[in-house]
Length: 64
Image (cartoon, rainbow, N blue to C red; front, side, top):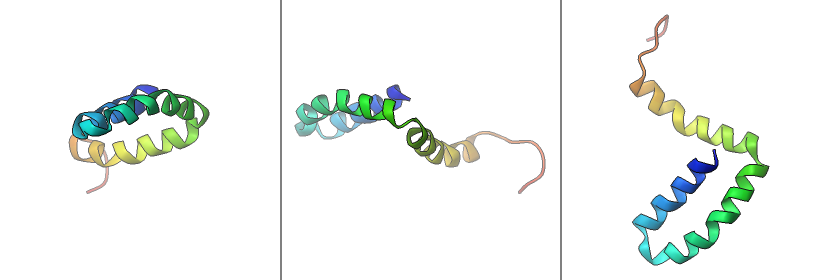
């Protein structure tokens, strides 16, 4: 989960290079925050992944 947070911060730094210094300062803080909030991080990751999974993974069984 920490790698997801770090990846998001690095992606933001790539999109907004003028914020790279601030992003570099936030990476350790984000890692500490993510380590202390496992339920919230898991919920957020699930909320982000669920639509992607619905589009890209063929589920078997009932449904649409």
